[in-house]
Image 1: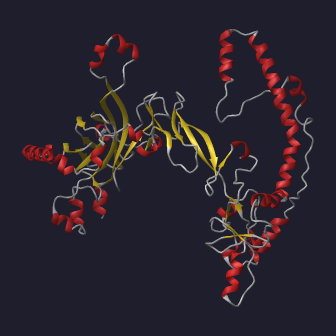
Image 2: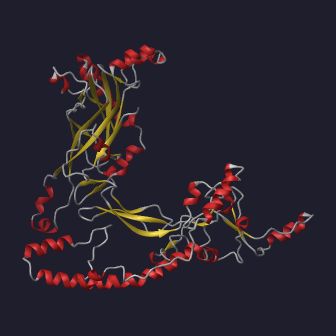
Image 3: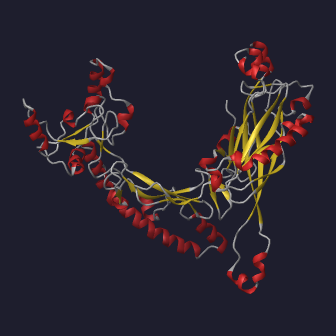
Length: 543
């Protein structure tokens, strides 16, 4: 298992401290770095669960035509142009004319191929060779196919029944909405005139609109006493539901010869109305529209993500992702230093004694690991790491006579507490690291060789600095009775120099303040580091 590092978002709880990493609720609080956002106004990390999403525009993924929001509902969220999807393979269909007449020589074929084509036209799939003529769908002209296909959809019994159902309930919904608004305003006026200001403020706060939740509009007392049964006339359906279609499906399944004759679930669910079980009766579908979304901070409503309006563009007008503000962290185990042990990786003894952790973390062992931090800022940062004490998982098999042994943490982690990370620079992406940092790396290597006699200083501390990346070494000591996964929470704090400009008034009145020392800012966040599963001692004995 590859070690991973996830970042914490405190949107699901009021406590900024995350839960223990082995708790079931911990998996919902941590996310990969590329899925997080950063709000500059709140100075906080945001995730997809807490941001507010707004649709900024609709477009067709096939023709890249921008669709106005007013026509999306009328077109049933489908493209109104000649964009269709194959019901079998979901490939884009093309419009072709009828087959030209057969000819003996190539000259007549060349003449016929230059003709635009004669009706009827039909849809053809270049991948699975499906065409709409198999389901008796042809078109009189090669343009405006969506309107022509709409006639087939509107003439379906289910579509007609749905339109009748909307016409039946539309007068009642219109009357109830208008009476609800007047009754609500009258009730609010009479209620606020007889209650104290505190109760009125509480009721007005509860009456606010909540996104995604329908607003409650109580009916007047006169209507409430009569009931809603007498207000709505009884609706009777024109389409019979006696089960004739089910009987036909049963008869079709009994006479089935090949499995390919039955339509798959994804093919049947793509249609708007009820579909048949037969794959030969599947009809072409208009391509569904896609949308570009804007994401806002739930606290300050500041825009975090705003794409460009054009469907052809993949750029963003505003893009505040956490990867541009938080240092990227990657954890890994160092490779084995013994070449003979690498050649003998197939043997069981070499896998058990390998200190790289690739074969698993065995109980009672000590394993070094490396943590690489990449600075995305244009200023150097000072990083401080604080590892939370691992909480032992509850175990019913713990002996009753040794309560202290049951509370002992399953493992211990050692990491350097503070170290600097250089600033990001565009030139480092194109220049050779050895040419830029060869001398410095050699000096660091000499210091490591001189100070590595103690043993522990060789694995815990700053191991390497190159460009805006600093690699630090850590060590995890697994207990003899440890189980589960070696996962721990880590508090990361980094301090950087703020380059916020001074106010114009201050710059005019006190020019000497331009030479003031820049303000230092500190940001703190939590992360969880998963080093892998711990192999207990009894499992080693069984193997």
